[in-house]
Length: 236
Image 1 (cartoon, rainbow, N blue to C red):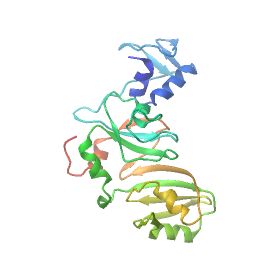
Image 2: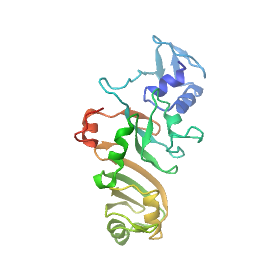
Image 3: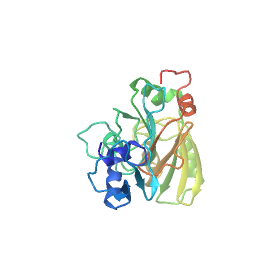
Image 4: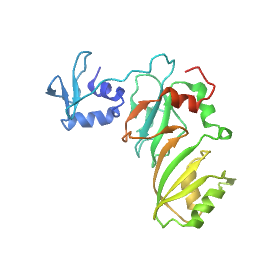
């Protein structure tokens, strides 16, 4: 397979970012600086910045793929192949996967993708109260009144948002934990109080944390994470 695809499927970064690493001469193939378009074979040694890269296969015993991605700003959460910068092409996984829910194009952070369409509604259904935690940067100083108002619920497009948890992080930053996922919800909630969101990063979905994943990197979910997301569900 192409070297960029091999690097992408390892979970180190996306295929597009792998091309950039190769272009920057940070990748070696069998001791030689790799060229864009290089081919990888099974016994080849690949180093990135001098460190070994090993492909990470689907977790043994699973029927489906479940991965956590740190989505960068600019990537669109759609499986439509005609949309430039769609998340499926960005990940470049060898299996057919699609995102569970969404992060808008201007947002970044944790998003889950899977090949198992049967579990998507279970995770997204708001009455199941799956928690989603975000770190948010805004254009004005965060006040107690703003945080209290956000936590109580806000009228957004004719619908009152569910109560949520908020806390101050910095003068221009706060943390918010939602149990629903309306389109552009946090941005619209903040706008109702005269705030503009400058940065939005999702860092947790229930027991799945963004952790040390760098933008563009992904990893397989652990068994513990899957059990937390899908209690009682065994068709993995």
